[in-house]
Image (cartoon, rainbow, N blue to C red; front, side):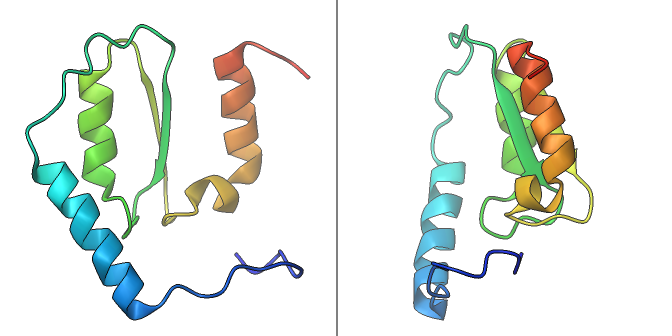
Length: 100
């Protein structure tokens, strides 16, 4: 998480974190949208300990998007795709059907 040494974002404030998580949870409790009409190949990736976007919402999205692919990275939080960058790049390449 600390590999980027230049142009780092300022740390999120506690009040910003609370506002964001409250909004995300509210969205998660809202009437579900019909995702069954999504026809594009969809890759969903998350960490198994994401405090910003609860992991169970990724499972729910995967269940509601036909043919979607779900990857949950173990021991990862909100930055799971960065914590597992090599695996994520391989998954994106496979998802896009490319070898480069």
